[in-house]
Image 1: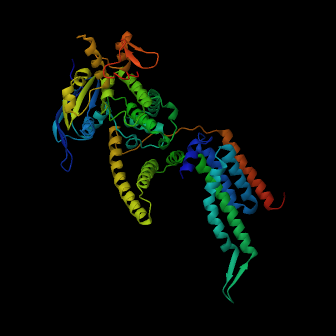
Image 2: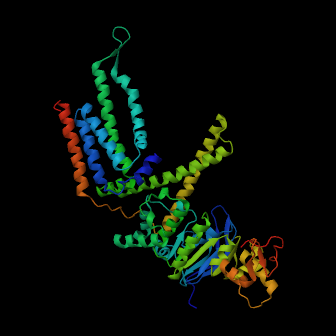
Image 3: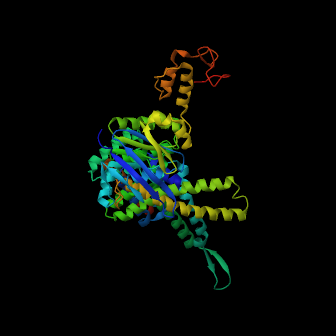
Length: 303
Length: 250
């Protein structure tokens, strides 16, 4: 395997005023993965993300891009931010221009692209997030979900190698989440590495390749999604619960007893796993091989 | 103000080149100022109202509410223009014919001029004006500042509104003394949040390669000769009719 794209070693960050946000954490981001930074609120996720594009300078520790230690002079920072795009949690913190198209054009113009190339990038980014119809709208007239997508388009138009998103689903409804994940998946398929922070275990479980479990300014463990989120003990230490899909599948397996099973990652996979054994009865209550589902003895499961 | 802004963004003539709207509006404005207002001003008022309501599709109600504020201001001024007070002999009020004429011409002229401005602000968003100003050589820094303020006004307004709603929900405005206190707290809080917002906005901009210049793509409009000619025609027609009416030739 080639060297990781971005590595963080022994990162410590103390805010002016003495609050310790990060206490010596290690993290590595491989090319082409979808990495979830998973942790409860206030565990330092945002502070970490601000280090990934050089917004914050670590108190101690080192960040390497392509194996080279990063520098913090203006030129180095510009080159760094060209490769690592950061989307903030709150779109209003990012959108500054009066119209959607103008806001998205800001990044490409800063890359030194011509107006024609910029216009093309704007079209492409807006189309990818399915907000082309908003190009001429006033930024302040958008809904929250629209603002969020436009904010992402503004970073995407710079075609970063790594796209870092802070709390990407915060404030979005399920439909908005589905759409956004679809667009990001498309982006990922074209080779962009994705890093996103979240406190949503279900999202990390169903969507990330790897998970870095975050707790009080440290990475408790980093690894394959299923392995990390299957470890109840370590999840408990991070004050998180295992994903419902996994818990449910495990409960089913305990009845079945297959040692070489692969845990389902999506709703659909879980339903397929249930397969023939799962058949909704005529009165609407779920039945599993003639008996109610484990753990739901009285009512069964609705889905 | 929000209503004006909303119509500026959504009216039917939003995508016209700003000059196509500026030409008839400024032309009629000049006519209002140089021709006798009693005959010209009603024509200008009607022309601009028709363009705004029937042309651009802005509701008449909105136009009237934009004109209402200056109209109210004018109405309060009419008595003072029409009536002259005589202190020389004893205290006496006179309704002079000259005063009345002055009051009428002033009112007509001001309302007609306002209708030209109302047409412009209701049909063209601020960004288009700024783009035009930049083209005629206004410094980029100034325009960036205006546009940034324009954007942040709405963010600030939204915060103020939610803050006020949250305070109201907890009975912050149930008594006069509480209202004063709540309003003070809200103002202090908004100030603090504005500073934080500025800091986070800087982070967001830096992440996109900000180096001190807020350059964005300028809106592109195609100048339509037909529409320009129509605008010019309207100005000419109003000018001729107004002038002839003033001389009593029609």
